[in-house]
Image (cartoon, rainbow, N blue to C red; front, side, top):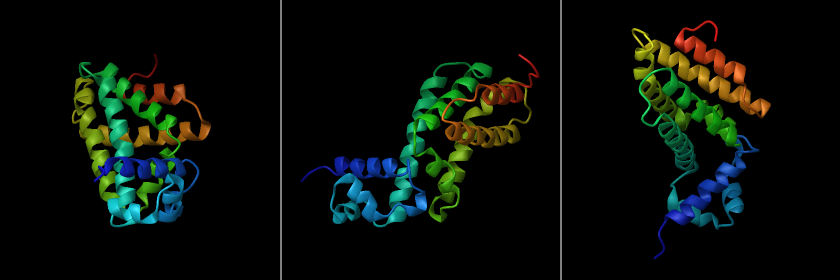
Length: 182
């Protein structure tokens, strides 16, 4: 018996490719299996429904981003440099992935993903709490929530432009570090 991962990954890869040019609500099981070059039955060997597939696709996208963020923040001490490294890793990862719009914005209106979106935002906010505390924010929690939302908005602006927006990145970092110029 073959391991499930190659087929599962091929289907997830196919969905991610499709989301580079299609809305999340418009990708069907038929489109996914056609893109993967697989039979429709193989889809249901991995997921009981399209909703479960979309959850897996969303989770994989954000897990990959999280790996990049964790690697970028590495052993940096909490503070400005660590915060900037994490923000840049997230934004660069979003900019490099054509499926970002679907998996970042459209996932907010996909009923089966609201719990994943909320959990992801909570994890992201928790990750930067030490940085904000080191920068003097007390309490850091409200600022972390706002910062996560602002970074996601910058990701969408950059995606639409097809490039980094250094001014927005710098401006958000200045807000987070409470530095009006520099």
